[in-house]
Length: 147
Image (cartoon, rainbow, N blue to C red; front, side):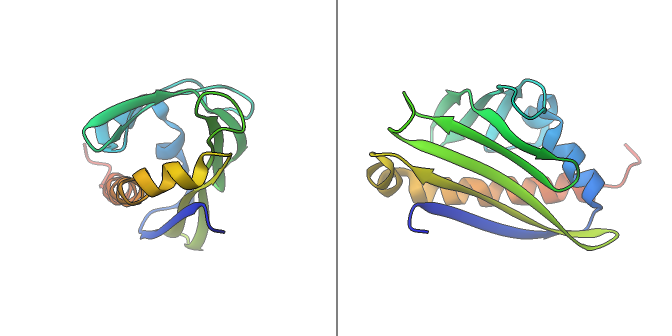
């Protein structure tokens, strides 16, 4: 697909732990360098409020959670302005490798009449942000529980 960003990372933690971190939206500001604040409840159909850092700017958007499958999938759909202008279907897919190792597939599919134009401007920075979030999630998930 032309208008997509897809990243992957292996995390040495259980699918339960990774899913728990991804869906604990209130703690994003403690570890996440990309989505620096998130509010809402992680239930399918609910609307959440995400504030993301893209370069030097912060952008707040209010996507709707479209798929939440415990320990497997966490997805939302957001729009810039109105539906059909620039839409993003953001996803996290957790693939279990072993009991304490997962492969996280993290990406976004973009559509809408401005998608190609906007991605040319922000695509590379957005990819870097996804990778930074993946690496921060890995660090968070691989921490020992000895606080």
